[in-house]
Each structure stands twice: as C-alpha cells, then as structure tokens.
Image (cartoon, rainbow, N blue to C red):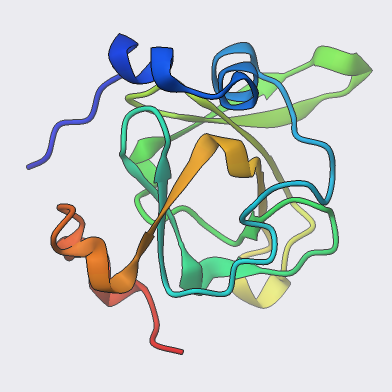
Length: 148
C-alpha cells in the first residue's frame, strides 16, 4: 500500500497560489482554475501528498466557477470539517495525509449521484492522465475512470 504524507520539500516547491490555497486555506478566483474545463480522463491527486482524491468520471459542470465532483475517489483520503469563517457555516474539504485545503462540499449537487458538490480549487490538485496512472502508482483506481 502506498504511503502518502505532507512533505516540507514539496511544500517549498509550491507556487505562491498553491501555497496560499493548500497551506493557508485560500480560494482561487471563480473561473480561474486550470482544471475547471479539463475533460481528460484520469484522476486528481493532492498536489502536496499525491494521495488520490477525485476521478474524472465524477467531475461535472456545476456552473460555480470551480471544478466540481460528485464524490471522492477514495473517501478515506478526504476529511470534512466544519468551517465557520467569513460568516458562513460550510463544510471544508481537506486531504487526510497532506492536510491540504481543497475546497468545500455542498448539498446542491446532482441528486441522482448522491446530491453532493465537492467544489475544489485547481491549485490544490495535480491531474494524472489515465495512461499514466499505473506508472505513477495509481493503477488500483483505473477502474474508476472512464474512457472518452
């Protein structure tokens, strides 16, 4: 089994935006994330720890301005915490091992797929194409992504 962890070496290499979002619980401007319109097949992993988070097959266009997913690819890798910042009560989403701030989860997602919308910052993610998944150690998740 692969071990994932928060690496100070990786954190030092993050861009200023990636650092602000993952380490300081920041947020990208709506419509600005590089994965918002990504339609390629593969998985999204934590930019800090590499732990698998979301599959392209669970990504959908929610119109909110951030990449949206109906569920995590490996629920055990995602922590959901109460967030009362900015005068709101929301559920924050953080990676388990990397402790990276990913975004928030809301209950206004597609009802036929469970009703959740994981609204995630692109800067907290790294995309692994389906054809690269096995070589990068994510072969166990290939059955969770679809061919286009």
